[in-house]
Length: 492
Picture (cartoon, rainbow, N blue to C red):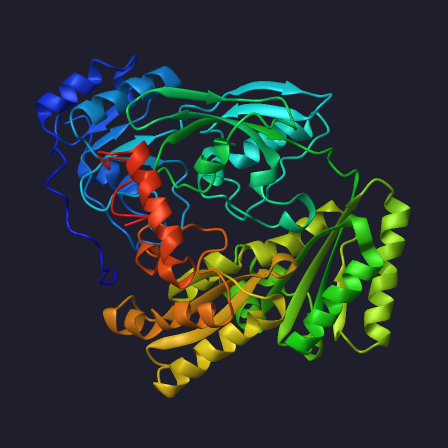
């Protein structure tokens, strides 16, 4: 585990004791809703999965995990924590990459996995109301049975929770088609830092009566309240889906392929993803599909790959459009080769290549991961300049195995990975703040969709003005004057 620059524990927060655990238990309806190493109901090993992020980079020392079964129970626990100055870390699926959902020190972990019910669905409007702890893939499966789709798709869909998705304003693989959660989410239920429940649900797409308060909580990372349920507008599920992957000779050609895809596919274009050869090689070596991920002959493998997905209602019409795009790209020498999925199974396998890029690069070494938003034409320059920096230190092939890039080309979201042999202060200092300075040079954002968490909180000034940061601090102080909600992160 690397050396992390984290704030010291605040003496303002209460250190929990066995007596505190007994008081908390009395607030809950089930004995299994609280696990603690303080009273022997859990061991430290039992709590490790909740204390440590999935990369093994951030590790807290919480001794108390609470898993309320209802919003009312959660509200009661939060009020108790507020009254006793106990710091809280809200936690969903713990799939984040910036240390936002694990404790920094000994904060109480408030897990939302038991709040996992679908409260209602209106098949006329497509509005789903569901609790925050439902797993994204399960929410989408429910909607699929009704002929609808959740307007968000992520590689971590099998474990991430929709409340965490909203709390981090996750973007995902189909933002190009469905837009951001700020546009899809119609209402929220939130437990405030003092334990009050704010019910901001709405079945209305138009409502101009005062401030749009839900927007304060979307992307707030549990810093001013805990999202317990969401109301979200879900579109009809496409009845015709096509997927293709193209091998591309250069990043400049990727840009032209993107332009041609928009021109040929128009309204049925639902995703456009890019990944480089380093990412692809990692997937072939470490991905779950093994050799099944080899989709091109060696002579037609290029330095870049583009995945294109269409979603419509007319299979023949959509297939013709994608085939026409393929022919145009080949005739214009913009691609080296291409593979068009012939059925749902092949489409799934092609998507798996892109979705396995993050985990495969992590399996290749200790991956420093950066989620950046930059102009589309400059996306890969960031990767190249980072690699040049590592080469200037003579680290590539040694301390640093390689530098890779993949991402959502449709919205300028780059996932930069510096794969090292180990997490170390030396490597991290060479990457940061250089990567944020580089992003600022391109007028980009240091966090496109993963949030700030503990990792990026110290560097927010590279993307936000002093006036903006001051307003955010004032907002945090107004909602959470005691500072108990997800401390040491987000806005310092």
